[in-house]
Image 1 (cartoon, one colour):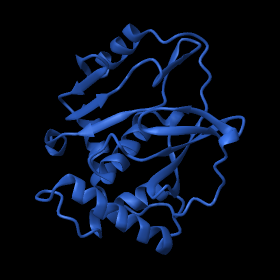
Image 2 (cartoon, rainbow, N blue to C red):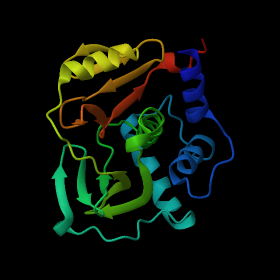
Image 3 (cartoon, rainbow, N blue to C red):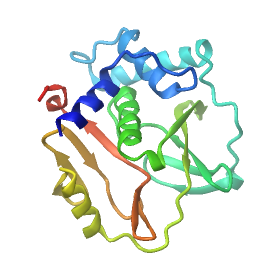
Length: 213
């Protein structure tokens, strides 16, 4: 558990050199080091609006505008937080307004944590787009075709084996890591040949995450 927490803390708080193609980590670094936003004392709604102004500026200065075409002909599905479109025969793109997160930084951290735990369905940040005056992140992910219905008891056992314990409904918490993991219903966890694939994750960091063990 200590090794996992150390690795995650390095991913979230680290200032290591990153690949020029890793837009997600680059953007998260920009927010942590360069965005002049006081997260501790300001209203979260205000913070998110300020973050969006910062992202809109970075779209220009850091080439973060999604240049591809999002066609309704390729529409696959829609949830409360995002819309899904077919990208090619093997991948989908998702546009997300970060509605489940109080700040955009929380959303970026969620993607980084997902990519650590579930590399087979890792998110790649392609950039951002503005639709009807709303800012959306555009990410790409491998398309998973389920071969059987997801057994939520299997999901629960898998998560408990890895230190995440059910708190209510489809929500979990790992006390050792200080991470909340929510919304794990059978549309966000798919089963392919008896293997679980987590495709839409909602991770939140708590204050305990920052504590060293």
